[in-house]
Amino acid sequence: MLYAALKTLHVLAIVVWVGGMAFAHFFLRPAVAALEPPARVALMHDVLGRFFAAVLAVVVIVLASGLAMIGITHASGAGGMPWTWTAMTVLGLVMVAIFGHIRFALYRRLQRAVAAKDWPAGGAALAKIRTWVGVNLAIGVAIVVLVGFG
Image (tube, rainbow, N blue to C red; front, side, top):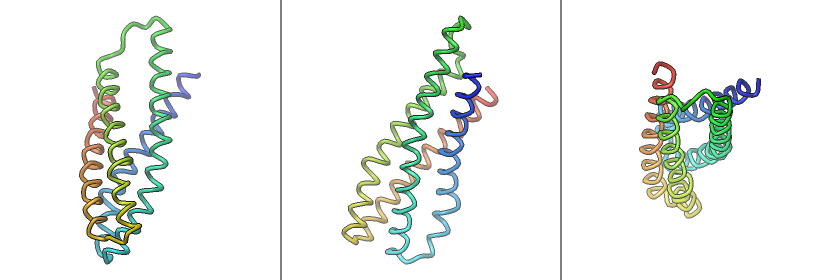
């Protein structure tokens, strides 16, 4: 029962993270491209601030639930982790590191640009965020495919 609850939390957290990246990358960003730079950069700053706060919580849930599921599996004497779990763990940690860079370096650049009303710098920060979100989205989709079908 505990394992099933942990797995549910784990999967739902991944859905929020990967789904949020897909939404932002493929739907929100193209839609706001029609806005003038001050409105576009300010809107993306606000949206990303909310999303990144949620992803911080998601990262904690994913790491805690994943570690707990590995512990339960190990304690049950089921043997070593399947190779897909190892791949998921390594790639997931890469995603966390990339998210850390996005949130604590690139998003701070965006925050400073918005505070200074420096729209070109804000646009440049958003472009870098978009690139790294795209990388993380690709890794997240690869994990889903790997674990779902591997």
